Length: 112
Ligand code: HEM
Image 1 (cartoon, protein in one colour):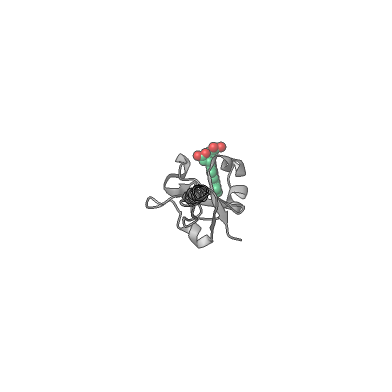
Image 2: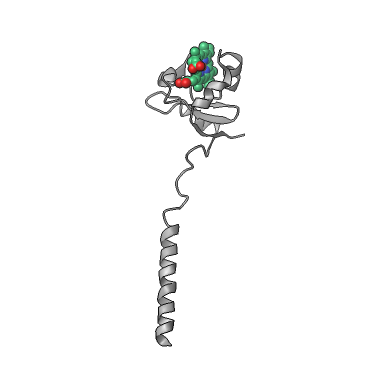
């Protein structure tokens, strides 16, 4: 009988240790990544593509990473600088409209 209880105890302990191991490392201390981040306009302004900084632009509340584009060298593109909400400009001024954004990775959204 004692042996049986001992084995059950050992099994329970193993299960507890295994579960604890699974949940560690899944903590949410890291800032949101991969399209989850919510930017204020001030935060977006930091990503102007200058001085080696990443180049992000917001259009219709979505923040895109244009850093990988050759057409956004140093965060600049046909007279526009990254780090801003360019919703009106891309629709009213650019010859291409919003369809080109489909190729750009989404990094987050703009705070309402
Ligand atoms: C005078 C205004 C502008 C001109 C003449 C212009 C011109 C162009 C041209 C010729 C292309 C390449 C065409 C293509 O790939 O289909 C392009 C790409 C692009 N443009 Fe503009 N653009 C203007 C404004 C803007 C604005 C305001 C934005 C705001 C976000 C923007 C975002 C983009 C993006 C994301 C791409 C794709 C880049 C890539 O695929 O690497 N453009 N633009």
